[in-house]
Length: 369
Image (cartoon, rainbow, N blue to C red; front, side, top):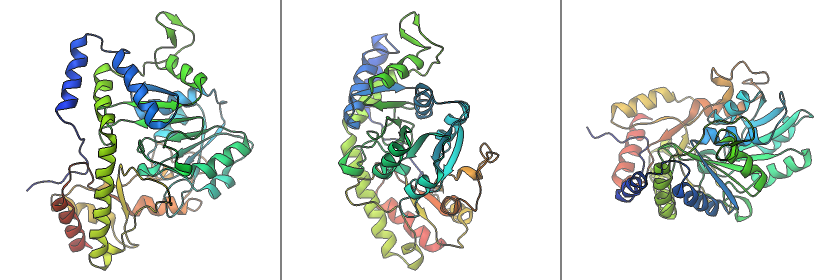
């Protein structure tokens, strides 16, 4: 049986050639490939500075660190997301305050964020969930009124477009990208911090390289979050065909929606994220919300028995062990995140996926539901 994977990176001969070129240069870290890659990332994000780092979680860690937030300060984080932004805040001694998400977009709810802001709030992290930009205009207004920095976790959203036609990552004081193998642009592992503020970029550059502003000049304690030259070389090729990758994913998402709507009643009931007018979803993940009462574990298991990989979409922070002990995390206070944690499911979705693959996935869902 041919298995349809949940995700697959889009890697070809050009990426292999770029990696070989970087290896042959003998310069394997912080060289010309990194410099060129950073310029390309900054251009895509529509900002003046980009700093390439080892991974997306490192990007979050470095920005929060560079902002110099007070120990014990509260950081607002969407309650339904991968735990990386919450973990990054925790390791810096910050208190995570989960904010419920909008039932349509599955991104941080501005109304819930407004209720969560307190005199102890020192920052807000908005996540562009699955590649759909959050309502950064409304969240930005809230942050400005509260006098706190807004950070955009655009790990899944490179190339997406949000409010006022601005690229994902360009809102707030800084944005963060991930180039993990499941992301649209991959460098194997990798990430980037993007910002319009030179002071933030400069401190992130130092902190990613043992606190050095130049070789041998250690200005503060730092860590090693450097991106290898081989990874940066691959990323440059990937960014060169970003628009083609995004266009293909948009067509694939539309095909899925047409097939689901044309299916039996239960597949037509599968909900996807609502995309606001003028926004462009990057579709890093195609997630659906199962109808109430449907056992997701059974659906995932039945799909895998048919040679189709599927899985949870992402997590409610109050439902994972690493964060369950934090104050303020409760099922009653976070009803939308609670439902999504149990009912949202990621379907196979990747560049190169065929119409026949989509038909096979939707047909299997029809049988199971």
